[in-house]
Length: 450
Image 1 (cartoon, rainbow, N blue to C red):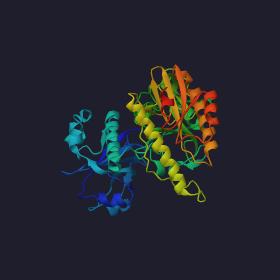
Image 2 (spheres, rainbow, N blue to C red):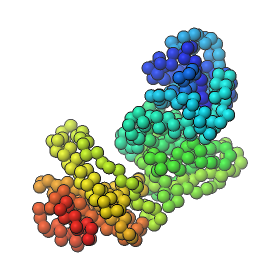
Image 3 (cartoon, rainbow, N blue to C red):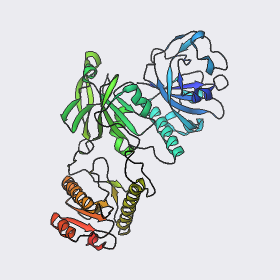
Image 4 (cartoon, rainbow, N blue to C red):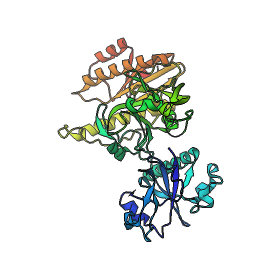
Protein backbone atom coordinates (compact mmCIF):
# COMPACT_ATOMS: atom_id res chain seq x y z
CA UNK A 1 0.00 0.00 0.00
CA UNK A 2 1.36 3.41 -1.03
CA UNK A 3 0.51 6.97 0.03
CA UNK A 4 0.21 9.96 -2.30
CA UNK A 5 -0.32 13.72 -2.29
CA UNK A 6 -2.88 14.90 -4.88
CA UNK A 7 -2.73 18.60 -5.75
CA UNK A 8 -5.70 20.66 -6.91
CA UNK A 9 -6.07 24.27 -8.02
CA UNK A 10 -9.02 25.95 -6.24
CA UNK A 11 -9.47 28.23 -9.24
CA UNK A 12 -10.31 25.20 -11.39
CA UNK A 13 -11.83 22.81 -8.89
CA UNK A 14 -14.74 23.50 -6.49
CA UNK A 15 -13.25 21.93 -3.40
CA UNK A 16 -16.02 23.29 -1.13
CA UNK A 17 -18.69 21.56 -3.22
CA UNK A 18 -16.85 18.26 -2.93
CA UNK A 19 -16.59 18.71 0.83
CA UNK A 20 -20.29 19.51 1.17
CA UNK A 21 -21.25 16.42 -0.85
CA UNK A 22 -19.23 14.04 1.31
CA UNK A 23 -15.99 13.72 -0.60
CA UNK A 24 -16.42 10.92 -3.15
CA UNK A 25 -15.23 11.31 -6.73
CA UNK A 26 -15.58 8.97 -9.68
CA UNK A 27 -12.48 10.50 -11.26
CA UNK A 28 -9.52 12.64 -10.28
CA UNK A 29 -6.90 13.79 -12.77
CA UNK A 30 -3.51 12.09 -12.51
CA UNK A 31 -0.42 12.50 -14.66
CA UNK A 32 2.02 9.77 -13.67
CA UNK A 33 2.50 6.67 -11.53
CA UNK A 34 -0.46 5.10 -13.32
CA UNK A 35 0.93 1.59 -12.93
CA UNK A 36 1.88 2.06 -9.27
CA UNK A 37 -1.40 3.54 -7.96
CA UNK A 38 -3.76 0.89 -6.60
CA UNK A 39 -7.15 0.56 -4.97
CA UNK A 40 -6.78 1.03 -1.21
CA UNK A 41 -3.80 3.41 -1.46
CA UNK A 42 -3.94 6.40 0.87
CA UNK A 43 -3.84 10.02 -0.23
CA UNK A 44 -3.66 13.57 1.12
CA UNK A 45 -5.48 16.33 -0.77
CA UNK A 46 -3.34 19.44 -1.22
CA UNK A 47 -4.98 22.75 -2.23
CA UNK A 48 -2.57 25.12 -3.92
CA UNK A 49 -2.32 28.87 -3.31
CA UNK A 50 -0.87 31.13 -0.58
CA UNK A 51 -3.36 29.94 2.06
CA UNK A 52 -3.37 26.35 0.86
CA UNK A 53 -2.04 23.09 2.22
CA UNK A 54 -3.42 19.63 2.98
CA UNK A 55 -7.15 19.81 3.67
CA UNK A 56 -8.21 16.15 3.63
CA UNK A 57 -7.06 12.54 3.80
CA UNK A 58 -8.64 9.49 2.25
CA UNK A 59 -8.11 6.44 0.05
CA UNK A 60 -8.28 5.47 -3.61
CA UNK A 61 -11.35 3.37 -4.32
CA UNK A 62 -10.09 1.93 -7.60
CA UNK A 63 -7.17 1.79 -10.01
CA UNK A 64 -6.37 4.50 -12.61
CA UNK A 65 -8.30 4.39 -15.89
CA UNK A 66 -8.82 6.50 -19.01
CA UNK A 67 -11.67 8.95 -18.48
CA UNK A 68 -13.23 10.77 -21.43
CA UNK A 69 -14.85 14.15 -20.96
CA UNK A 70 -18.38 12.70 -20.76
CA UNK A 71 -17.53 10.69 -17.63
CA UNK A 72 -15.92 13.55 -15.70
CA UNK A 73 -17.41 14.90 -12.46
CA UNK A 74 -18.43 18.17 -14.15
CA UNK A 75 -20.30 19.52 -11.14
CA UNK A 76 -17.00 20.05 -9.29
CA UNK A 77 -14.95 21.57 -12.15
CA UNK A 78 -14.95 25.29 -12.90
CA UNK A 79 -13.12 24.39 -16.10
CA UNK A 80 -13.84 21.03 -17.75
CA UNK A 81 -10.70 18.90 -17.47
CA UNK A 82 -11.22 17.09 -20.75
CA UNK A 83 -10.23 13.51 -21.46
CA UNK A 84 -7.44 12.31 -19.17
CA UNK A 85 -6.08 9.57 -16.97
CA UNK A 86 -8.05 9.48 -13.72
CA UNK A 87 -8.40 7.62 -10.44
CA UNK A 88 -11.53 7.28 -8.22
CA UNK A 89 -11.21 8.32 -4.58
CA UNK A 90 -13.07 8.91 -1.34
CA UNK A 91 -12.20 11.48 1.33
CA UNK A 92 -12.28 9.92 4.81
CA UNK A 93 -11.33 12.95 6.89
CA UNK A 94 -11.74 16.67 6.22
CA UNK A 95 -9.55 18.94 8.37
CA UNK A 96 -10.99 22.03 10.08
CA UNK A 97 -7.79 23.93 9.22
CA UNK A 98 -5.23 23.07 6.51
CA UNK A 99 -1.80 21.66 7.23
CA UNK A 100 0.13 24.58 5.68
CA UNK A 101 3.18 24.55 3.44
CA UNK A 102 5.23 26.01 6.32
CA UNK A 103 4.66 22.85 8.39
CA UNK A 104 6.09 20.71 5.59
CA UNK A 105 9.06 23.06 5.17
CA UNK A 106 9.86 22.88 8.90
CA UNK A 107 9.57 19.09 9.18
CA UNK A 108 12.86 17.23 8.58
CA UNK A 109 11.17 14.23 7.00
CA UNK A 110 9.95 16.41 4.07
CA UNK A 111 13.38 17.95 3.31
CA UNK A 112 13.78 18.07 -0.47
CA UNK A 113 10.28 16.69 -1.11
CA UNK A 114 8.89 17.43 -4.56
CA UNK A 115 5.59 18.64 -3.11
CA UNK A 116 7.48 21.71 -1.82
CA UNK A 117 9.59 22.44 -4.89
CA UNK A 118 7.31 21.44 -7.78
CA UNK A 119 3.77 20.82 -6.54
CA UNK A 120 2.09 20.74 -9.96
CA UNK A 121 4.98 19.46 -12.08
CA UNK A 122 5.13 16.24 -10.12
CA UNK A 123 1.43 15.72 -9.41
CA UNK A 124 0.70 13.23 -7.85
CA UNK A 125 3.56 12.94 -5.35
CA UNK A 126 4.57 9.65 -3.77
CA UNK A 127 5.11 9.79 0.02
CA UNK A 128 7.51 7.63 2.00
CA UNK A 129 6.20 5.67 4.99
CA UNK A 130 7.81 8.16 7.39
CA UNK A 131 6.27 11.12 5.54
CA UNK A 132 2.78 9.61 5.62
CA UNK A 133 3.05 8.74 9.31
CA UNK A 134 4.13 12.32 10.15
CA UNK A 135 1.31 13.76 8.03
CA UNK A 136 -1.36 11.43 9.47
CA UNK A 137 -0.21 12.22 13.03
CA UNK A 138 -0.49 15.95 12.33
CA UNK A 139 -3.99 15.46 10.90
CA UNK A 140 -5.02 13.52 14.03
CA UNK A 141 -3.69 16.37 16.18
CA UNK A 142 -5.72 18.95 14.26
CA UNK A 143 -8.89 16.87 14.58
CA UNK A 144 -8.29 16.31 18.31
CA UNK A 145 -7.61 20.01 18.94
CA UNK A 146 -10.79 20.99 17.11
CA UNK A 147 -12.78 18.67 19.40
CA UNK A 148 -11.02 20.05 22.47
CA UNK A 149 -9.65 16.65 23.51
CA UNK A 150 -8.31 13.38 22.20
CA UNK A 151 -10.40 11.33 19.81
CA UNK A 152 -12.43 8.79 21.77
CA UNK A 153 -10.59 5.50 22.18
CA UNK A 154 -13.64 3.30 22.53
CA UNK A 155 -16.60 5.24 23.92
CA UNK A 156 -18.12 5.51 20.43
CA UNK A 157 -17.85 1.77 19.69
CA UNK A 158 -21.22 0.02 19.42
CA UNK A 159 -20.52 -3.49 18.08
CA UNK A 160 -20.67 -6.45 20.44
CA UNK A 161 -18.53 -9.61 20.03
CA UNK A 162 -20.26 -12.03 17.69
CA UNK A 163 -22.14 -9.35 15.76
CA UNK A 164 -21.80 -9.32 11.98
CA UNK A 165 -21.50 -6.26 9.76
CA UNK A 166 -20.75 -5.56 6.12
CA UNK A 167 -17.19 -4.34 5.84
CA UNK A 168 -18.20 -1.32 3.80
CA UNK A 169 -20.62 -0.27 6.55
CA UNK A 170 -17.95 -0.88 9.21
CA UNK A 171 -15.60 1.59 7.52
CA UNK A 172 -18.41 4.08 6.96
CA UNK A 173 -18.94 4.10 10.74
CA UNK A 174 -15.39 3.92 12.06
CA UNK A 175 -13.07 4.83 9.18
CA UNK A 176 -9.99 2.96 8.05
CA UNK A 177 -8.92 1.49 4.73
CA UNK A 178 -11.45 -0.78 3.06
CA UNK A 179 -8.69 -3.08 1.81
CA UNK A 180 -6.01 -5.10 3.57
CA UNK A 181 -5.80 -6.87 6.89
CA UNK A 182 -4.65 -4.01 9.16
CA UNK A 183 -6.69 -0.82 8.95
CA UNK A 184 -5.75 2.09 11.27
CA UNK A 185 -8.55 4.65 11.32
CA UNK A 186 -8.14 8.41 10.90
CA UNK A 187 -11.69 8.99 12.15
CA UNK A 188 -11.47 7.20 15.50
CA UNK A 189 -8.88 5.71 17.83
CA UNK A 190 -9.32 2.20 16.46
CA UNK A 191 -7.09 -0.18 14.53
CA UNK A 192 -9.26 -2.71 12.68
CA UNK A 193 -7.72 -6.16 12.17
CA UNK A 194 -9.07 -8.76 9.76
CA UNK A 195 -8.15 -12.45 9.75
CA UNK A 196 -9.27 -14.76 6.96
CA UNK A 197 -7.67 -18.18 6.50
CA UNK A 198 -9.27 -18.59 3.06
CA UNK A 199 -7.33 -15.64 1.60
CA UNK A 200 -4.50 -14.99 4.05
CA UNK A 201 -2.47 -18.18 3.80
CA UNK A 202 -1.69 -17.67 0.11
CA UNK A 203 0.11 -14.47 1.13
CA UNK A 204 1.95 -16.03 4.08
CA UNK A 205 -0.52 -14.76 6.71
CA UNK A 206 -0.87 -17.77 9.02
CA UNK A 207 -2.92 -16.55 11.99
CA UNK A 208 -3.30 -19.02 14.87
CA UNK A 209 -5.73 -19.31 17.78
CA UNK A 210 -3.62 -20.34 20.79
CA UNK A 211 -6.73 -20.33 23.03
CA UNK A 212 -10.03 -18.45 23.23
CA UNK A 213 -8.20 -15.49 24.81
CA UNK A 214 -4.85 -15.68 22.97
CA UNK A 215 -4.37 -15.14 19.24
CA UNK A 216 -1.24 -14.96 17.08
CA UNK A 217 -1.71 -12.45 14.27
CA UNK A 218 0.69 -12.04 11.34
CA UNK A 219 1.78 -8.53 10.36
CA UNK A 220 1.25 -6.94 6.95
CA UNK A 221 3.60 -7.05 3.95
CA UNK A 222 3.26 -9.72 1.27
CA UNK A 223 6.74 -9.51 -0.29
CA UNK A 224 10.08 -9.10 1.48
CA UNK A 225 10.80 -8.94 5.19
CA UNK A 226 8.09 -7.26 7.25
CA UNK A 227 9.04 -4.08 9.13
CA UNK A 228 7.36 -1.81 11.68
CA UNK A 229 5.69 0.73 9.39
CA UNK A 230 2.07 1.64 8.72
CA UNK A 231 -0.26 -1.05 10.08
CA UNK A 232 2.49 -3.01 11.84
CA UNK A 233 3.62 0.13 13.64
CA UNK A 234 0.01 0.97 14.56
CA UNK A 235 -0.39 -2.43 16.26
CA UNK A 236 2.97 -2.27 18.04
CA UNK A 237 2.31 1.23 19.41
CA UNK A 238 -1.43 0.95 20.03
CA UNK A 239 -1.25 1.24 23.82
CA UNK A 240 0.99 4.30 23.89
CA UNK A 241 -1.10 5.88 21.11
CA UNK A 242 -4.36 5.18 22.96
CA UNK A 243 -5.75 3.04 20.11
CA UNK A 244 -8.02 0.01 20.46
CA UNK A 245 -7.33 -3.17 18.48
CA UNK A 246 -10.61 -4.54 17.04
CA UNK A 247 -10.43 -8.03 15.54
CA UNK A 248 -12.78 -9.28 12.80
CA UNK A 249 -13.21 -12.74 11.30
CA UNK A 250 -13.32 -12.46 7.52
CA UNK A 251 -11.91 -9.86 5.15
CA UNK A 252 -14.59 -9.24 2.52
CA UNK A 253 -18.33 -8.81 2.42
CA UNK A 254 -19.80 -9.56 5.85
CA UNK A 255 -17.31 -9.85 8.73
CA UNK A 256 -17.83 -10.94 12.35
CA UNK A 257 -16.56 -8.89 15.30
CA UNK A 258 -14.31 -10.91 17.64
CA UNK A 259 -13.85 -8.28 20.34
CA UNK A 260 -11.17 -5.89 21.56
CA UNK A 261 -7.59 -7.14 22.01
CA UNK A 262 -4.25 -5.86 23.27
CA UNK A 263 -0.66 -6.89 22.66
CA UNK A 264 0.64 -9.25 25.31
CA UNK A 265 2.67 -6.84 27.49
CA UNK A 266 5.14 -9.58 28.48
CA UNK A 267 5.90 -10.65 24.88
CA UNK A 268 4.15 -8.38 22.37
CA UNK A 269 5.55 -10.02 19.23
CA UNK A 270 8.05 -12.51 17.84
CA UNK A 271 9.66 -13.13 14.46
CA UNK A 272 8.88 -16.03 12.15
CA UNK A 273 9.44 -17.24 8.60
CA UNK A 274 6.78 -17.53 5.90
CA UNK A 275 6.49 -17.77 2.14
CA UNK A 276 6.02 -14.60 0.15
CA UNK A 277 2.76 -13.92 -1.64
CA UNK A 278 1.66 -16.63 -4.09
CA UNK A 279 4.48 -19.04 -3.21
CA UNK A 280 7.45 -16.65 -3.43
CA UNK A 281 10.70 -17.05 -1.46
CA UNK A 282 10.71 -17.15 2.33
CA UNK A 283 10.89 -13.89 4.26
CA UNK A 284 10.80 -12.72 7.88
CA UNK A 285 7.33 -11.94 9.26
CA UNK A 286 6.04 -10.40 12.48
CA UNK A 287 3.86 -12.52 14.77
CA UNK A 288 1.83 -10.27 17.08
CA UNK A 289 0.74 -11.93 20.34
CA UNK A 290 -2.76 -10.69 21.13
CA UNK A 291 -4.70 -11.09 24.38
CA UNK A 292 -8.43 -10.52 24.59
CA UNK A 293 -9.27 -7.47 26.73
CA UNK A 294 -10.61 -8.76 30.05
CA UNK A 295 -8.36 -11.82 30.10
CA UNK A 296 -6.05 -11.92 33.12
CA UNK A 297 -2.51 -10.67 32.47
CA UNK A 298 -0.25 -12.35 35.04
CA UNK A 299 3.27 -11.74 33.71
CA UNK A 300 5.37 -10.37 36.62
CA UNK A 301 7.12 -7.70 34.55
CA UNK A 302 3.97 -5.95 33.33
CA UNK A 303 3.40 -2.62 35.12
CA UNK A 304 -0.04 -1.92 36.57
CA UNK A 305 -2.05 1.13 35.53
CA UNK A 306 -1.26 4.47 33.93
CA UNK A 307 -1.56 8.08 35.12
CA UNK A 308 -4.93 8.67 36.76
CA UNK A 309 -7.67 10.09 34.51
CA UNK A 310 -9.90 12.52 36.42
CA UNK A 311 -13.55 11.53 35.92
CA UNK A 312 -16.18 14.02 34.74
CA UNK A 313 -18.58 14.35 37.68
CA UNK A 314 -21.23 16.21 35.66
CA UNK A 315 -21.95 13.47 33.10
CA UNK A 316 -25.61 12.44 32.98
CA UNK A 317 -26.02 9.04 31.25
CA UNK A 318 -28.92 8.17 29.03
CA UNK A 319 -31.11 5.30 30.28
CA UNK A 320 -29.86 1.90 29.12
CA UNK A 321 -33.39 1.00 27.97
CA UNK A 322 -36.51 3.17 27.49
CA UNK A 323 -38.11 1.78 30.67
CA UNK A 324 -35.07 2.31 32.93
CA UNK A 325 -36.29 3.65 36.29
CA UNK A 326 -35.66 7.26 37.27
CA UNK A 327 -32.85 8.51 34.98
CA UNK A 328 -32.12 11.28 37.50
CA UNK A 329 -31.32 8.64 40.11
CA UNK A 330 -29.06 6.80 37.69
CA UNK A 331 -27.24 10.08 37.01
CA UNK A 332 -26.93 10.79 40.73
CA UNK A 333 -25.28 7.41 41.34
CA UNK A 334 -22.75 7.91 38.55
CA UNK A 335 -21.96 11.46 39.65
CA UNK A 336 -21.51 10.37 43.28
CA UNK A 337 -19.29 7.47 42.24
CA UNK A 338 -17.02 9.81 40.30
CA UNK A 339 -16.89 12.37 43.12
CA UNK A 340 -15.80 9.65 45.55
CA UNK A 341 -13.24 8.33 43.10
CA UNK A 342 -11.72 11.74 42.32
CA UNK A 343 -11.59 12.68 46.01
CA UNK A 344 -9.74 9.45 46.87
CA UNK A 345 -7.29 10.07 44.02
CA UNK A 346 -6.59 13.53 45.49
CA UNK A 347 -5.82 11.93 48.86
CA UNK A 348 -3.39 9.51 47.23
CA UNK A 349 -1.63 12.37 45.45
CA UNK A 350 -1.54 14.51 48.62
CA UNK A 351 0.35 11.70 50.37
CA UNK A 352 3.05 11.75 47.72
CA UNK A 353 1.94 8.72 45.75
CA UNK A 354 0.76 8.43 42.15
CA UNK A 355 -2.89 7.45 41.57
CA UNK A 356 -3.35 5.08 38.65
CA UNK A 357 -6.17 4.26 36.24
CA UNK A 358 -6.38 0.82 34.61
CA UNK A 359 -4.94 0.11 31.18
CA UNK A 360 -6.43 -2.52 28.85
CA UNK A 361 -3.96 -5.01 30.37
CA UNK A 362 -5.48 -4.53 33.84
CA UNK A 363 -8.73 -5.58 35.52
CA UNK A 364 -11.27 -2.74 35.69
CA UNK A 365 -10.41 -1.28 39.10
CA UNK A 366 -11.28 2.35 39.88
CA UNK A 367 -7.96 3.54 41.36
CA UNK A 368 -4.66 1.89 42.26
CA UNK A 369 -1.39 3.11 43.73
CA UNK A 370 1.98 1.82 44.84
CA UNK A 371 3.25 2.37 48.39
CA UNK A 372 6.66 0.74 48.53
CA UNK A 373 6.24 -2.93 47.65
CA UNK A 374 2.48 -2.85 48.21
CA UNK A 375 0.02 -2.29 45.39
CA UNK A 376 -3.37 -1.05 46.60
CA UNK A 377 -6.32 -1.53 44.24
CA UNK A 378 -9.73 -0.02 44.98
CA UNK A 379 -13.36 -0.39 44.02
CA UNK A 380 -15.64 2.61 44.67
CA UNK A 381 -19.33 2.13 45.51
CA UNK A 382 -22.14 4.62 46.03
CA UNK A 383 -24.86 3.38 48.41
CA UNK A 384 -28.62 3.63 48.82
CA UNK A 385 -30.52 1.75 51.56
CA UNK A 386 -32.32 -0.44 49.02
CA UNK A 387 -29.17 -1.51 47.17
CA UNK A 388 -26.53 -1.47 49.93
CA UNK A 389 -26.17 -5.26 50.35
CA UNK A 390 -25.96 -5.78 46.61
CA UNK A 391 -23.29 -3.09 46.23
CA UNK A 392 -21.18 -4.50 49.06
CA UNK A 393 -21.42 -8.09 47.80
CA UNK A 394 -20.50 -6.96 44.30
CA UNK A 395 -17.61 -4.79 45.49
CA UNK A 396 -16.06 -7.54 47.63
CA UNK A 397 -16.25 -10.02 44.75
CA UNK A 398 -14.69 -7.56 42.33
CA UNK A 399 -11.80 -6.81 44.69
CA UNK A 400 -11.04 -10.48 45.29
CA UNK A 401 -10.86 -10.93 41.52
CA UNK A 402 -8.61 -7.85 41.06
CA UNK A 403 -6.22 -8.95 43.81
CA UNK A 404 -6.00 -12.45 42.36
CA UNK A 405 -5.29 -11.19 38.84
CA UNK A 406 -2.62 -8.71 40.00
CA UNK A 407 -0.91 -10.89 42.61
CA UNK A 408 1.78 -12.00 40.15
CA UNK A 409 2.56 -8.41 39.12
CA UNK A 410 3.39 -6.92 42.53
CA UNK A 411 5.10 -8.27 45.69
CA UNK A 412 2.00 -7.50 47.78
CA UNK A 413 -1.54 -6.58 46.71
CA UNK A 414 -4.38 -5.42 48.93
CA UNK A 415 -7.96 -4.42 48.08
CA UNK A 416 -9.84 -1.38 49.37
CA UNK A 417 -13.63 -1.06 49.11
CA UNK A 418 -14.26 2.71 49.26
CA UNK A 419 -17.89 3.54 50.16
CA UNK A 420 -20.01 6.65 50.06
CA UNK A 421 -20.79 6.37 53.81
CA UNK A 422 -20.80 4.06 56.83
CA UNK A 423 -22.63 0.81 56.03
CA UNK A 424 -25.94 0.40 57.86
CA UNK A 425 -24.98 -3.07 59.15
CA UNK A 426 -21.76 -3.45 61.12
CA UNK A 427 -21.48 -7.10 60.05
CA UNK A 428 -19.90 -5.94 56.78
CA UNK A 429 -16.79 -4.84 58.68
CA UNK A 430 -16.24 -8.40 59.86
CA UNK A 431 -17.03 -9.89 56.45
CA UNK A 432 -14.47 -7.65 54.77
CA UNK A 433 -11.84 -8.31 57.44
CA UNK A 434 -12.19 -12.08 57.03
CA UNK A 435 -12.01 -11.69 53.24
CA UNK A 436 -8.85 -9.58 53.50
CA UNK A 437 -10.56 -6.46 52.10
CA UNK A 438 -10.16 -3.00 53.66
CA UNK A 439 -13.57 -1.33 54.10
CA UNK A 440 -13.41 2.48 54.35
CA UNK A 441 -15.35 5.69 53.59
CA UNK A 442 -14.94 9.47 54.01
CA UNK A 443 -14.44 10.07 57.73
CA UNK A 444 -12.89 6.62 58.15
CA UNK A 445 -9.94 7.39 55.90
CA UNK A 446 -7.46 6.09 58.44
CA UNK A 447 -8.50 2.55 57.58
CA UNK A 448 -6.94 3.05 54.13
CA UNK A 449 -3.64 4.43 55.38
CA UNK A 450 -3.01 2.22 58.42
